[in-house]
Structures are given as structure tokens and as C-alpha cells.
Image 1 (cartoon, rainbow, N blue to C red):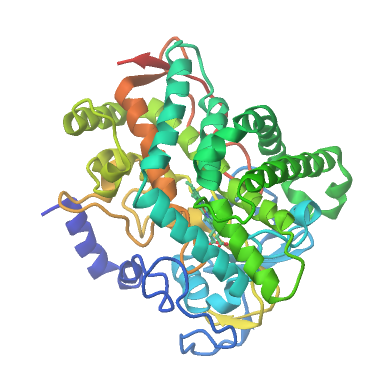
Image 2: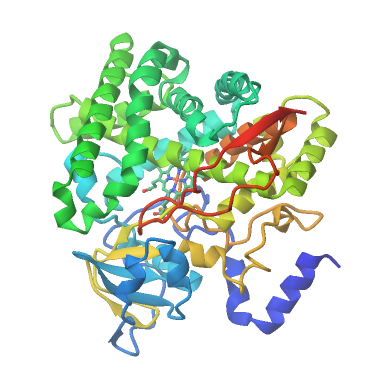
Length: 511
Ligand code: HEM
């Protein structure tokens, strides 16, 4: 009997409350029959489908100890140490609700999505792009129409027909190979911005992205890298107003406005060539949607500011996450050389020297390699999600007020010993049981419910298409002369920041 099966039986007998999460696997909620992350119907006046039992205790959620939020280490780990399933308190000027348990997150983000599906106001976003964009849209018709376009585009052009996307990655792999072959000590996160930004713009503009390589390399990349560096220093300006007058915040706002201005120029140039926006790239599809919506309202259809804000949102949600996860990935490879060798053996055995493609990932040809990527996502879920309640509600028997910022503790779910066997161990094999490959419901780095990450499939394929060829060709070793690996430590982070490794360097050797 496989270890996974034995574990499932033990959990089933010993922990009925915990095993119940497995029945939720891959379920985005009953409004999404296709399970594609887009609600099939969206009647905003209808209540959630759960017959919720009311609030028997008629009481407020347990009070959050504010000291936990002041930690500059790993706030989600500290919060995970508290036993409460949900906690309510204040983060500076923002009232906050922490969802500290999977069942509660499921109740909020799946059963009560209409109340828990909005995003809160964000000071920095508002300063830079006002109410425009996609990420902060309320859970309503405009959000739904954008999300449908984005998900259909990813599904048709990146996942089912990944050929163009693969070509874009192959070109950038050549660039990376050139750098890695020098054998220099390298901070991998520093060299990933160009490849990933170029891949991103391929998704936005299709093959005509090459018209903008100069803009990308000379303008967007330096501005973007500055923005990534400044982000941890400015993130608390949202809930600590006194921070708003500081230099880094002013610089961040100015820098981001410059990015938006370059982006807008690129977008305008793209549409100079096809004035009606009837191409097949994501930019064309988004523009058509905006035009139709504004026309229906009888408004001015000059749409470039809105389109720029949507594309900036997509850029922010896409590239930094992939850079950080690849950065973590190589740090794990340095710390687990046996895993690295096993990944390489699997690649050698099944690819027999040929290049990996998107289909290999969809067919799970390399389950251990894929597991090595997913395990990094599980052990260090990098994202910090913000949602907002738009009405008073009853959650887990507690009264929750309207207009409160809601934060699911994904770190806790990903590292909960009731849900994962020895969660502190990095074990790529935990996603396969010898026959099948898959992720359990407690795999939540992309969140859950109808507003979960729509880029999950793209993100997994994207990382696979970088990791596989690089490990096929190179062995990655620590820079230290005695071969000791850099520590598996993250930089201190504030709530809502991404989790980043302490900077390290590696050396790539040709295999
Ligand atoms: C490893 C990489 C990534 C991780 C861990 C990740 C995770 C997440 C998470 C946790 C959210 C918040 C969901 C929620 O509120 O419940 C999110 C939102 C989002 N992500 Fe990702 N993401 C990744 C990469 C990507 C990629 C590659 C794309 C696009 C190709 C993408 C597009 C988006 C978008 C558009 C949203 C906003 C969804 C909405 O508000 O409807 N993400 N992501």
C-alpha cells in the first residue's frame, strides 16, 4: 500500500474534520460548472448558496494581538501559531480579519463569495492609477468580463496552444544560457527580469512584441526593478498614513507612473498598426471589451488609460511572482542536491536529450520535476491576498462587519501538520502516489474560489518551461568554497508583501 494511501486512511479515521477538505478538491464553487474560475452566472443580488446557520454565538471574532502584525520576520507563521480559526483586529488604519484555517477560507471565498469577493481600497494603487485596472475591481460584471477574456486567452493561446509562448521562452533561454555558461557567481533573480518581462509582453502583444524590445529592455526593466526593490519599503503606506510623506513612497509612486506612461506609449503604438484592435493578442481582446462597454454607456471610447492600468495590473501579478518562485526554486536546489540530481535523472530518462514542451507538463511526463516546483510553492506560498467584505455576514459562527480587509493565512494551510505529512520537509514526491499526479485541496498558493488566481495553469507551465531545460543542461552549486548552501531564509516581510529569499549567489556548471 502506498504511503499516501496509508496516510489518507489514517487521516480519515483520526481526523474527520480535517479530511473533509479533500472533498473540496478543485472545486471553485457551484457557480462554476466548468471549473474555469469564471462564474457561469452572476446575480449580484442573490445570497450565497450556503444555507448558513446564522450566528448562534452572536459574537465578534477573537481579538487579534496587534504585536503579531508588527513582526518583521514572517507574520503568517506567527499568526499560524495562534489556535483561533479567525481573528479580528486593526492594522494601522485598516480593520482586519485573518482567516487562519482552511475551512474558514473555504466558507468565505467559496460559499460567501458575494460578500468576500471584493478587494479593499489600496492607497498606492489609488495614487498611481485611480480606480482603473482589473485587480481591484469589485466582484461584478466588469470584473467578470475581464476575467473571462483573460482566462479564455490563457487557455487557448498559452495552455492548449503553447507553441508561440514556448518559442518566446526558448529565445530567452538562449539569453540565460549565455550568462550561465560564463560560470560566474550569479544572483539568479537579477537576470530573470528580462526573460520574464519579454515573455509577458509576448502574451500581451503577440509576435509584434518584438517592436517593443527596446522599450522593454531600456525603459521598462530598470523601472520595474526599481519598483520591485522599493515595494517592501512602501507597502505599509496603505495602513500607516504617516509613511505617505516619506521619500521611498514618493519615489515609488513617481516610478510607477513612469512605467504606466511607457506602457501607454507601447499600447498606443501597437494600435497605430491596427486601429480597430482586431488582432488576436490579449491587448486587442481587452481593448475591444473596454470599447464595447464604454460605447454601451455612451461614453468616450478613448480607452488607453484604462487598458494601460489593466495591463499594469497583469504585469504586477505575473512577473514578480514567477521571479520570486524561480529564485526560491534554485535556492532549494542548492540546499537539496539529491533532489536536484533526481530531477536531472528524470529529465534525462524521459526526455532523452530532447527539449521539454508544454505538453510534457500537461501530461505530467516528469512528475518528480513538477513536484519539485509545486513543493516550493507549497512550502513558501509567496502571495498575500487582500479581500474586503461588502456586507455584514456570519462566518464560522461569528459576526463579521462590512468593509473589513480580509486576509487568508495561506502559509498556515500550506504548513499545517494536520493537512500535510511533515510539512516542514521539502518533498517533491508528495504530489504523486505512484499512479496519479495531482495537488490536494490544501495546496493553496493560488488561493481558492471564483476569485483565485486565474494564472495558475500558466504559472505552472511557465516555471516548468524554465526549470526543465536549465536543469537538463546545468548543475547548480553554491558559491561557497566549502560547498555549503546559502540558508533557506526569507527576508523579513510585512503583511501583504511577497516572500523573498535572503539574496544569494549560485554557480552553474555545464553537465
Ligand atoms: C507562481 C506564480 C503565481 C502565484 C503564486 C499566484 C497567486 C495568486 C493569488 C494568491 C492571487 C489572489 C487570489 C485571491 O484573491 O484569492 C492571484 C491573483 C491573480 N493572479 Fe496570480 N499568481 C501567480 C502567477 C500568476 C500568473 C502567471 C498570472 C497570469 C498569467 C496571474 C494572474 C493573476 C490575476 C489576474 C489575479 C487577480 C484575480 C482576480 O482578482 O480576479 N498570476 N494570484
